[in-house]
Length: 156
Image 1 (cartoon, rainbow, N blue to C red):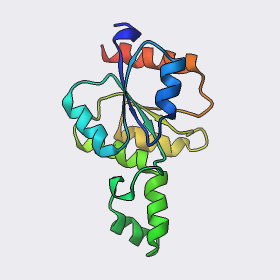
Image 2 (image 1 turned 45 degrees about the vertical axis):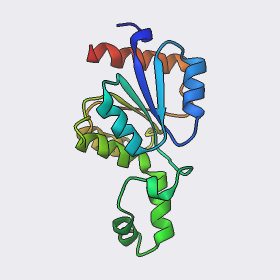
Image 3 (image 1 turned 135 degrees about the vertical axis):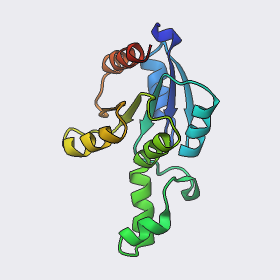
């Protein structure tokens, strides 16, 4: 299967990844959603070859965030604002968990987050989602293209 036959679902709260991938990594077809709930609905609609997932979601309404705010507030010593920040800063992980619980754990996921200093954290996440990969903000278009090609070849 070629890159032109690859479908990438971009899950982000802005438009940066869609704009940059469309411009600098042409070939795949891109679909974008802005929330975890929208991503789950899109995955239910039909197959996706790769999910490109943002980590931080601070530009969507708080009620659109996945995760239980009351539970996180308790974990943040009762500070509701700190809990909202935590949910925003780690929303990609909540979405990842939603994929796994929704039966989409086998879909290749590229998390846009730099785990180079958090290798143990990433390995823990990878045990939960074995098809998880990450890229830092300094990733090049060629590196993304190569990663998409590898992921697509594995799933064919």
